[in-house]
Image 1: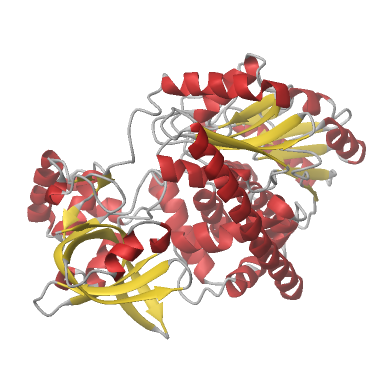
Image 2 (image 1 turned 45 degrees about the vertical axis):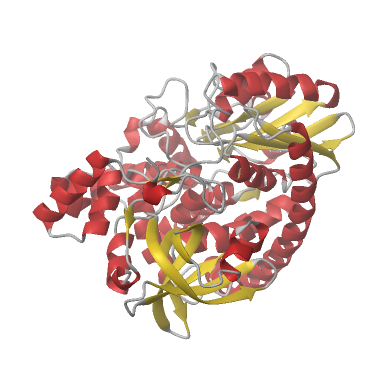
Length: 579
């Protein structure tokens, strides 16, 4: 039975309430712990037992950080890296061009700087070189360096790593591994085929961090103090959120601690980036994912590939300010390019049909730097895996995004093994590919077939899952702060969503082209402010603005809004239905 009787909402979704068993568990937890009932609903949905509730709300890194030795090749990688650092060998860091790659590189550069060493940073150009190590770059680096550390890439780079004659190579990565590994000193990757998968949720920066934990441990065994690793957790937190890693296990503690470090404003690059993003409050996962992350990514998407990594590693405030301003400009350009490609891709996908297991689009000259973002938008709009490809000459370079329960990376890798792709790889939720133009249609047909076997395309628009009913008067600052302790929220740990039943709309105001601001109440005196982003891109905006006194059920996520130093509760409205 639909929650509140909402079978089809304004966004075309069916509302689904909490599972009765989860509700009973939440009620028992509230009685045993004295925690607020809405918070217990969130914890019960996450599967947290009552006796672990208090500990879950205060995740401690010392309790959750895995032993680095759990990952294969870790001890070898740390020992070789340490030997190079202490022996004044020439070290190069080859990094992917996204936030995870840039943060991973900055971690290594920061650690080396603290012991008085330097390294060469190399980030490949997305258009000219593509993702990951390539033979010309590795050959050139090997001529001038003794050790090359590949971060957030390299697990499938057999040829390029073999081309690094005269240098040794370490890979620190998290992308899905193949049946064989490249011939190098070490491949540390929780997603190697021979790993248990227990740490598959780590991003590359977290893998690099664990390697530095092991390096510090080896130094400590010799009576030498290593660099301050806790102060580097701001970078790990940024990468974990921006790379959409599941916010479970140790990732929760890494982010919680990393946000505290970031709030101290000690890293010049992140200070400059926060200022140019107009962040004026304690950082949250929202800021990392939607303000900082896209700007760091902008260099790799449409500008100079190494700008993000250079900013994150920068120690000079003036240089950091200049880099942050350039990235901010590039991010604005990226948004314009993305909007054009998104409109064309959505029109093409709609013409092809949005009910297939795979939604895809390909266009002439679509910028490779925005196809991943557009794929995300298609995925969100259709609740299906999506692939968007930019064609150039005889080839197309594309990016895909998946939905929960459908492993896109494995299917893309299989397509490459079958010869339908020139190359491809990634992880469960995201993947990249290069395809010959004349193989585009058969490759997408085969990919659709592989994804269908995993259940893709079986549902319509995703059901809207709601955690509990709430009245406007109960949505207090204290409650929101309590609920935030169950976070951070994001991939793999969605923020709780509440339904406000049978409320009246008191005020509406259109903001910009597509957003709607409103306030509502239950008739008992309490009112709540709400913001609905993109409301006029859907039926929500016109429906609520033209309410004519009708009453509605509203659904969304609670957040704290800060304006001129004043903190108030705000509903981030996601859906509505006539009461």
